[in-house]
Image (cartoon, rainbow, N blue to C red; front, top):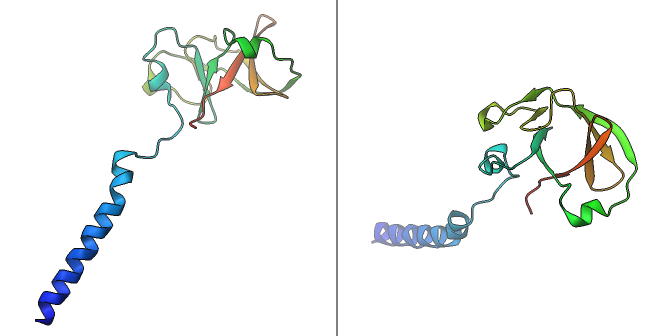
Length: 126
């Protein structure tokens, strides 16, 4: 009889644990966007730096109205590809190799090509 009570108790405990865990299965935690997600769109203009994707924001209205102070250089484009599996830090799909990347005192990052400043935003999940 004790064995049946033990099995019954364990069964109830397992049902309870599985029921509490269903939210994780339905809504798994997502990380930051990856180059693969962006490169599905042919017009994407991105680069990867320190494991974070940055996306061209020159057509974003609030970004074009920002005033910012150019900060230190944080990196440089060292490789260009449109294949997500080949993206590593310093890789871009449209920016040419040698492009300097700078931080600012605001939320934008700047790529400098032929003395032209192009704003990019960090693509972070929620």
